[in-house]
Every structure is written in structure tokens, then in C-alpha cells.
Image 1 (cartoon, helix red, strand yellow):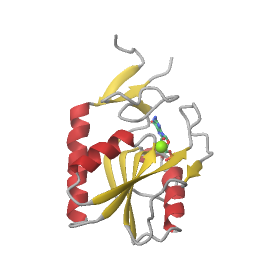
Image 2 (cartoon, helix red, strand yellow):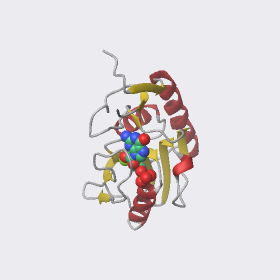
Image 3 (tube, rainbow, N blue to C red):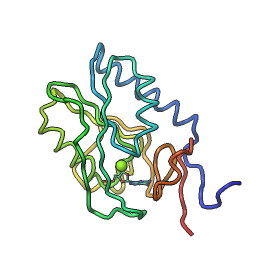
Image 4 (cartoon, rainbow, N blue to C red):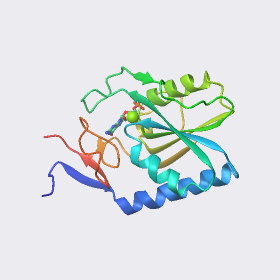
Length: 175
Ligand code: 5GP
Ligand code: MG
């Protein structure tokens, strides 16, 4: 049964088309590779896996954990980053992949952490960009869609760890 709290904002086929476009753009930039994709868990799960299948350059994949939301739909301001499971990034061309750029705190913190590991280059790709809310001085090198200030779920994005499995990106209106 349809969930009355959800409204489709970006349908699955539109997401799929845009992710393929981004992957081709990155393939052009890094002709021949190799690059290292670094997915920010858990929200970038679907974006990362669709993106890597469309990428036409040899690449390695790692994940990094960062969370700033603790069961709320507004940012808590606290951020935890776990770099324990990273592959070696020294001398590699790294592309950091995240689900959504909101205030920019997460991306800025992650970029600072990764820079300390001496990658040859560091670029960033986010699927969604709430540019109207970005207060930190960061801009993604690649983004899929700019969206207005709505709380969205699906395609990896969660609310209290629910809704990640949805193929569409949906606005969630809590009642
Ligand atoms: P920032 O640090 O840029 O403020 O927040 C980025 C993180 O907040 C994202 O990686 C994501 O986990 C979470 N976030 C921000 N906006 C939304 C949203 O609309 N929906 C969901 N599910 N998470 C969001
Ligand atoms: Mg996140």
C-alpha cells in the first residue's frame, strides 16, 4: 500500500540516467584511470554501486563511515568519521562519493581527513545538493541534482534506517 508520508521527487529512471551521465563524465576526466572510489556509508550505497557499474575506467572501491544524523530529520551538528576500513589512498586519484550535500559539514570534514592521507588528487561527487542550505565553504566537483530544502529518503537515503531500499527519491513528510 502507498505510504501517505511519501511523495516521489525523482523517479528511479531519471536517477539511473543521471548516474550514468555522471559516470561517463568522470570516465572522460580520468581517461585510463586508475581511480579509487570512496563511498560514504550508508547513504551512498546505491549511488556507489550504480555509478561503478557505469564507470568506464579501472577503479578500486573503499568505504568510509560518517554520520551526522541521529534519528532526526534536521542535522544534529555532531559528526563521527570512521576511517578504519579504508584502502590505501596514498598517491591515488580519489573520488569521494556521498548521497547528499546539505550544510557541507560532512564533506568538508571528510575532505580534510582524506587529504591527510596524501592522495594524488581528491574529487567529490554527490547525488543530491541542497545548495540553499550549504553554509560550509565546499562545492562538489560533480553533482546529480540540486534540490530545495525538503527531507528526502530512498535510493540509499534513510530516516531512522528505514526507506533506503526505495528505487525513487521521495520527499518524506512526517505527520
Ligand atoms: P551535511 O553534513 O552536509 O549537513 O549533511 C550531509 C549528511 O546529512 C548526508 O550525508 C545525509 O546523511 C544527511 N542528510 C542531509 N539531508 C538529508 C535528507 O534530506 N535526507 C536524508 N535521509 N539525509 C540527509
Ligand atoms: Mg551521509
